[in-house]
Amino acid sequence: MNHPEGHHLAELNLGILKYDWDDPRVQDFVNGLDLVNAAAMRSPGFVWMLPEEEMHFEQTSDAGNMGANPRMASTLSVWEDVASLEHFVWNTVHKRFYDRKAEWYDMGAALRFAMWWVPIGHHPTMAEAMTRFRHLEQHGASDQAFGWAAVKDAQLWRSKSCG
Image (cartoon, rainbow, N blue to C red; front, side, top):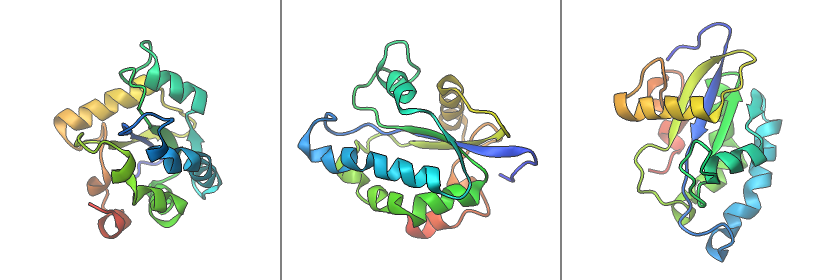
């Protein structure tokens, strides 16, 4: 998907932990969240991230948009472009945590990641993000939502992802 002029890249990743947040088996993940989020916010091209308290509500509340799963661990953010997000995901401390995802996440769900273009200055709501995510899940890559494979310029995911 080509980068349309006047747009930034939004991304939603969904994860469900194998164990409760206070379980010792996920404490390396839990203890690293502030480090990873701080690295994101310092990364060139970072624009915005849904604040932690809003994300917690969206993930765990019956009134949220993500199914009220107490083990949900997700991120909704906006980046200037694909290259900025790709660099953060594959070339920063985030990669160390990504490489350990099978230890912490229930890997049963096939789709866990979606991207889409948003007008510069727009911060997507979780309702919007989940609509985009479900569209990708049901219809495949399109202008509505897409994954790494749909972005010609994105290459790091091919060589640095771990399955």
